[in-house]
Image (cartoon, rainbow, N blue to C red):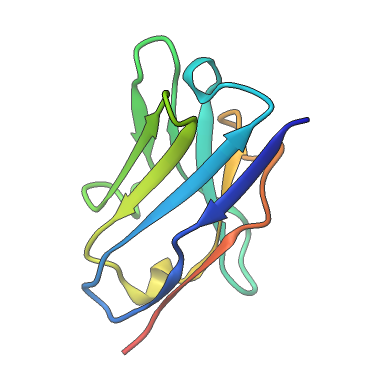
Length: 116
């Protein structure tokens, strides 16, 4: 049974940092393209980042490039999103998603709130 459980969200001030974790079960992140998406209130879902399997190449939305880093731990079967220099516009519910299209199976999400 495929399951994704996100954690690590919270409330931070602008300029702060958070690292989101996604525990995967029922499949292996090592051979599955994965992505992080977010949804802010009243806005469409935005794909933040994805990571491929063959060479581990990554991609980021322009809005987070240089501030966010996606990675995975194959041994633990986890996906991560390290977020630095957070801005108010990063506020939203973050999901890890199977695949790179942003609309695959996802977990329940973890809330990130950036506010002064």
